Image 1 (cartoon, rainbow, N blue to C red):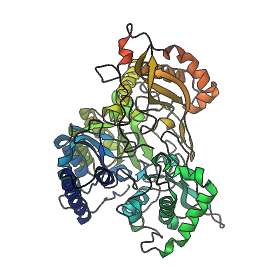
Image 2: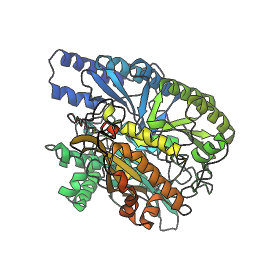
Image 3: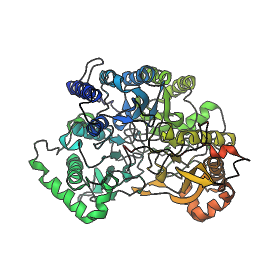
Length: 600
């Protein structure tokens, strides 16, 4: 069984002095800002570095982002998230694609109290936004995955601890993202981040193998996606943290501080070239020994917890995938429990691990659901993590507990067989709250979910749908089998909500392939387009064939989108006025975009 890692070692109700100091400073500078003694730009930089992000509604409404390192949560932390949703927000929180939890419509004046509540259970918003080292993300099945080389959980924990409040992690040229995966399947999404870490092995001269890492650098999404590139073939465990810090220092020294749109580490590949960038990182690592806080060697938390893998399971993902990249041909049929068990349960052999997903529609979790998840975690003695597809996974279970877990999730409305299936649509917050969003991406995600359900396609496996409300890819549309990002369209002299469709995004085998542009569609036609695409894939795929393989076999995006051409045209406003009103809106569409705090 995987040992639960305590994020902070704190007892509930006792604040870490460092968290207390952060909150005291926030209160002091908030008072100065409200008194007109602190300029807007200085306050904004400080606010963002403390995880507080502006909303398109303006006034004092704020989004609060809570860091959940590699997604790991304890019961009292789940209960606290429920309290935050109920007391400070609108009754629910939102799981992000980087394993944070966000709360919207929080009054600025109440944020210090919210921070103290979070701090009482060891949670922080520090460096969750802004030009900082962001939340350290990692595979949510680490330590329970049947395919992993190493359990990356303690490594992600060590990285989180090392860079939190680190001098180099504060005022960077731009945000810096670190992701961990335990194997080349890359469930932790290492291949499009500033630093992506994938556990690998290499052969020793004596014929044995050594487990370590392959580190990738300078990846990113945004409007111009870049794949992460390998730094070196193999990084020993003893050098991993020093390698990550070396990459961070090179970014700090060489990153563009004059143009935010070209400030991410990915742009250094264009300006320096990958060979020069690699050389600088390796030089920095070699000389990092002189730093006072040199992070070389095996981190203490790794030595304490161990990083042995869960062990290969030939059964793999229930009666779903038996190998990385394989997909179930059909999982429908049978009782609701049987469908859930086939779709949502993962097994690993060496540790006897059993894990199971709770499907959180659109990544939303209500206060009552947070409370119920905490009660289930306590009752079952399980581990819980939030995932980068905006779900919750229970880990360290045994077979006898699955029925109890299902019953508990069913009461909470979280037992749909949906995690990792077609209905598991990922969406950014969109124009509901984001200044940059053009469209209501959440509304489209809900419409696609309903349309797939109505068509009997919601439980098709092996196809992922991701949506962003603009081109900046917070919904990671570039990496999905079927991706959409919001655009303004002009039709019949009117402004209308639309989306660019992308097809064939793929992540795995220590590589990333970004989706290729297909049609531009009216927003109200995207659900039908998704039904047609998923329906054709389900009807034509061969056994264990991925969406990308099917797409390439049948002729690529041009061949597939030929069957969607009739959906690309806007009807006249008088015959279909709904096409000129976005989801969840009452009036005519208007692309109102505000000032950016997070683009690129």
